Length: 259
Ligand code: AIR
Ligand code: ASP
Image 1: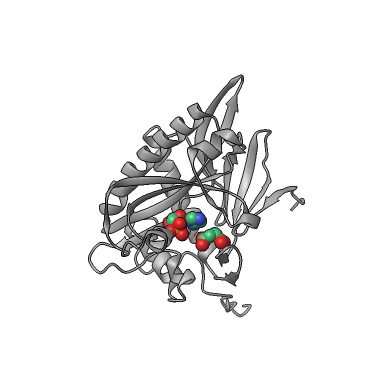
Image 2: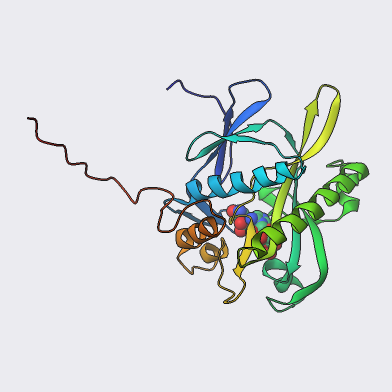
């Protein structure tokens, strides 16, 4: 295979030049990081599952008219996407208190919030992705007021849709992070959902047992991450009962003796 030009390498994904101008290939790695790379591991099978789950979610979003960067899945680990200019914000939507909100405000994990809360974090590893307000975003030119309005409208639609989607398969969408990008078509620019939406970027709890089916299993050293992500994929109907997203390892293929 010809060597592709690598455009960007992040903690869990790599972006390569796409086959046509304005496209990129998004490759999902097995790397798991947390607390800004202080914790790192390679978890066999994670990339394949996130590729499939994110494909599923983005296809559904496209179907209901939420614009995204997603074009199509290419193989086990890769998908074709539109090249966008990433807005340097992590947009977090919360329905139930957990994680940094619980820590910061002393609200017990699992407390239903009076309404969904949207937060913005400035995407900057050196600074540990600090939380910022709309004032910071407009003052420093990361996005305009109009763009923030568009991002909030998208975030609400994604949250409403995903909450229902997961509820239908017995999963509570506690919170999630999304990223947005500017997509140019001729002289028109619109804001689209970019990056990924997967158990790496959502908190997903089983509705009955409250079992965690997301990256907190890694962050909190609980183990069972691939099993949990597989369970999400299975419930969404992406993989079938008993199927693994990837063979467990090299399989010895016995060749028939020559006759
Ligand atoms: N998130 C934030 N930065 C990276 C990710 N993946 C996601 C978490 C969680 C939500 O944003 O996975 O679903 C809120 O995270 P936290 O740590 O602020 O509570
Ligand atoms: N992905 C981020 C990191 O590597 C944050 C997280 O998911 O905890 O630090």
